[in-house]
Length: 457
Ligand code: CS2
Image (cartoon, rainbow, N blue to C red; front, side, top):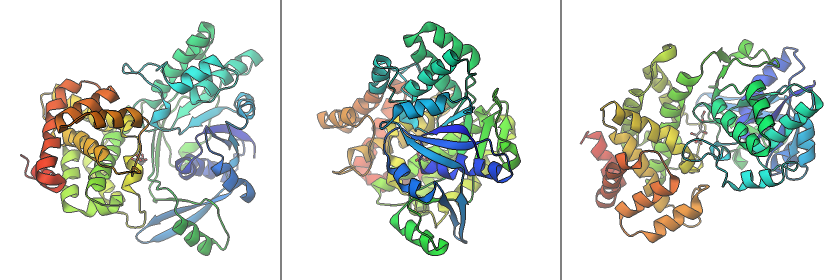
């Protein structure tokens, strides 16, 4: 097997999704697409997988049982803070033709207009010291510069994060970042580097010790870090790979011209509902998505949210939101996953725009109302304000958010302070509704407030 892909952000999601699709291609004999994983922070994944030859078990579970597969597509994992030069060498290697990323929403440092946030800590550090990068933009840009200097054609950059137009979003950030280093480099990237967008979908809860024990018993071997997931998986990818790609379409990947309708439906219906389940679940003491979804009040709220969000979808590409949500209902009810609401609750400031705020503003633009979407924002704020110490979940803006919440004395002030700290779009247009929702939660309790939406008041 030869390495053809470098993957940045080699966590459980990547190992349950892209690595599984690539594994299927390798198993068919196309040996040019092994994956070199890069961890931008912790050595934990490398330390777990190196002693087991980078092999790991992928456990697909639902109420009817568990299937184990051994995945062999990851060839090694590099830990960027330990050796950034090794990461640059892998990225600059002519064999590397695709760089895939799952670095989460917060690793796309955007300002309010969607452009590069030059105040971001990593952006500033990587601009000051471009040859020793620490962040995604720094590594991609330096590697593209090295490839250009060495006469190696650029790799294709494939974002696999839960952001709208993830390829285009990343392209803009990389070009703006490169322009601050060298306008010619920015121009080279603009003209020569492909950034296809993709929609990724697979629910992957964090691995627990109970998972490790169960997998070891079934496998007859210790696996330091198996990955647990659902049977469902989907990947829709814009087909723009000037340097070639694995024959993913032979293994169920949908290669399309425009991924936007798929991604919009997934972000609003799956991820939006996930966030609602996470915050309502946190507030009402429901530990997992399945527990929260089984609560009739939360269930009713999610259905209302689905009705509202579905009306904002473009209806392109023959997608059928009703069938999609029916399937989602089964996936959320999967009793074997134990997907913790606290896990999904993390990083709300980075997730809410694509999950609640954008569809909410579109509903208002078209003259409709959006009570559930506004209430979703309120549930987040209420969960943030009451998440305990140590907090059950965290956010990259925690310092600012905690200070904003501590300074205020009324729900109205808290809502305004939190929304402003996040610099969300169009705040004035939904501020009164979100304040009213937070006040209702104070007076009627969270369950009382959810019952209110079920009555359609
Ligand atoms: C979840 C996603 O943690 C979250 O924010 O909503 O990770 C979700 O499980 C995946 O996008 C499913 O494809």
